[in-house]
Length: 92
Image 1 (cartoon, helix red, strand yellow):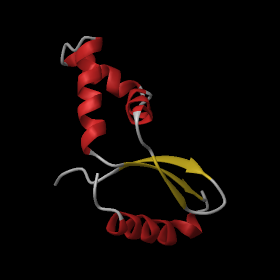
Image 2: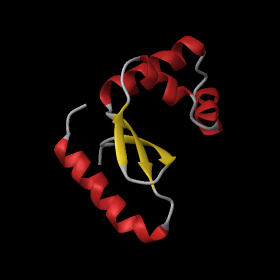
Image 3: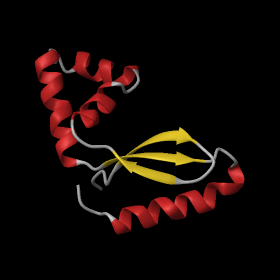
Image 4: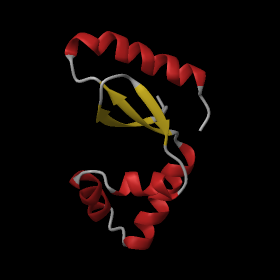
């Protein structure tokens, strides 16, 4: 199954979505935790190859910042909002 969308999570009072665009998309991918660096090292990628790889991902997969309450009582409503968001905006 292909990756539909990448969400960057933030805590907040209500569920909201903000599209991530432009160079900020590559920056978000690059700021990922240490496993991205381990992946690049394992594949023998230099900085240029890593940037090309991140650029390819950023150009193909939609990315959003998802703000949501951290209260577990809101989990069902949050997942419903995510599903509706994906259905509303399915394109990269």
